Amino acid sequence: LSSGAMSDPSDQPHAVAATPAAVAGGDAARFVFVGGLHRSGTSLLAELLKAHPEVAGQLIDGMPEELEQEGQHVQRVYPVDDALGGPGAFAHNPLAHMTERHPLATAASAARLEADWAPHWRGVEGAKVRLEKSPSNMLRARFLQALWPNSYHLIIVRHPVAVAFATAAWAARHGGGKRAASAASVVECARHWLRAHDLLLADLSSLTNVRIVRLEEFVSSPDAAQRTIDAICADLGLRRVAVGELEAAAGRGAISAGVNRKYWRACKDEAEAVHTALGALEPRFAAFGYPLASLDPAASAAPAEPSRNRLGTVSEPSRNSPWIDKLAPTAAGADATRLSA
Image (cartoon, rainbow, N blue to C red; front, side, top):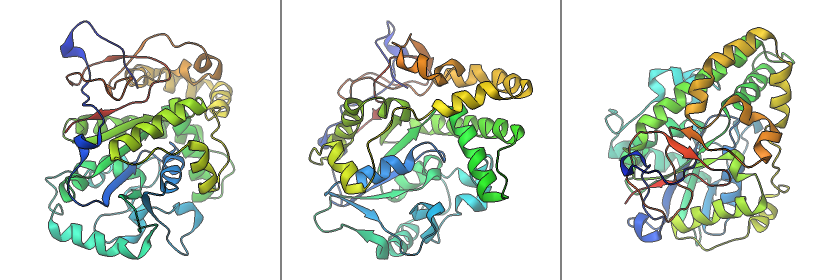
């Protein structure tokens, strides 16, 4: 999910310099919405940002751990992920995809959400932004932007096969007491990843302030994590804070680069039917910059050969180029951005 230069400008992704001026305006405590499929790293990214002294986050007393402090569970405007089919399925439900044309895209809905979330904000004093995290924000960013035009959207993306295995395993543990995910559920979760990201791709050109972060690049090294956090802070006009300080304030250990290692092993150990099904989907995975081989930790550690992805992004936050929905080369270690004023 990154890019290099292309000979034809019409084939380059769009990005505007990520400066506070480009995204400034409106209420100082603007909304930041974090989204991305379950098991993609939304909690990691949100927890680090909520530890920033200029970010107000939600702390919802008594919420079960598995609901992960998500604002979707304490509001009465739109359906929660579980009502739409749950992890690994919700994007197939037409009700999950909400845009500015939705009948609920009204000032009354914004007021209702503000009221529902008001009791749960922590760290409001001195905060420049308010951060809410829910996975399905990735499919209602246009709706949220209609409610708060100055809102900022962070979408985190992870290898579809890793997400499929992790989501299927999570659903098996929490949904029916099973100890292991079925092969069929892994393949269905992989198809769900494609549906969700196809919808996201179609929405990108309608979003004003959006940054896409690829989990594998974010956790690849301390420097890569710092670059991503620095870029987000620059977008929002927040002061620079060392990632190590955010980790300590959030009460979590250092970021680990081996996030997909066990899923590469799981993929290799799966039955031939799963290999065949996932192999049939590989051209679509690769179009987003995620060929199956990129799940291999050895391949991830090696210098990346240019691949191609549809979520056109740029390797430097300050680089500007015209956007179209075209393929763009991928380079390792770059964070993904698309911002426009």
